[in-house]
Length: 227
Length: 217
Image (cartoon, helix red, strand yellow):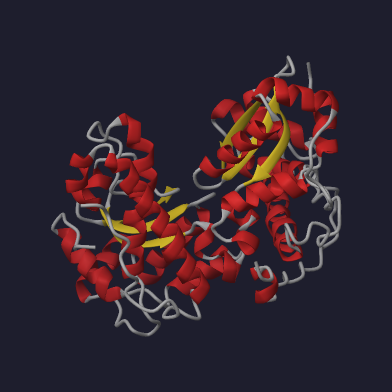
């Protein structure tokens, strides 16, 4: 296919306004990307990162900080805010922002330059055990991403016994609130892929699996998941 | 009779500069087309439902009239087909429209205080819909105008809607509706929408809705 639509449209994000100095440090920072914004080209464009990290992720962090300023959750860590705002399935207004900050950090760290390929070791054994084959895992993960109607996420998760399964969640929901330990995610909100793939969500997820996944990160998470 | 993808009522560049040509081409030719294909595929298993027509099919969403096996597919794709067929028609070339009729203006003033107040409320509904969805202006059961938003491809005709109404104006706030031109700037897209509203269609929708019906799509 010809040059990515994003480069044809020559888009760059407008720079963020200068930050005013804070009186105190807010609890929730916009964590930098683990790589340069062009590091995942051509599979995920620089333009996508400038908006996805620089605008969407930034806005979730900014809006959360506004919501919690001066209140009980200010200065608490992000994990705590996510669980507390989930409020046992009756989420407070902070949840969408807190969970989306969490989800996006987790997503960036699920990818790396020259990613993809296959996992090895204990994780690969578990994948073969719990899905039958690595290809079958990819098929199920892709299907979950394709069938999450509207906005949301697809996940590879593990439970306390180390058993792997696929999950999909709408909007900001994260499987942590359902007692699972996520080890891999793909963002299927349209903003994650529309500049580069337009309506072709299946192609995006396939490319994510084949070219972007950091199996090192996923293996580390698997090893560290609570037992 | 299977559902058919309607033609756009105008060329794909007609809504420029407010909605770009590429978006119109993909939005209609890919997204809407997929909803049509998917709802048709679901109804193949229950062909007697095809005779309902798209409006009555949507009114049946959330009731036992739709077999459980296809309920979600019909909600999502029957919803998507209605929503987009409705949406293309309530838009037109910029400056092509003469604004709301006297009757509609009066109803807007009565329900919201003013046209500006109605737009503010509509804009807030559109901006505040987290994730994918739609904002709607419609006629409620008591005959008054109301504003609501729905998630995903739900609409206020369906029984699953929090607030039921007969829609007379709608705005798609799925990211695919605006991302190529506006990216994260949804409020800018919402503001731009008012330049391309086809008030003549909205007037017709209002007249029909006030009698409890909808004009043919």
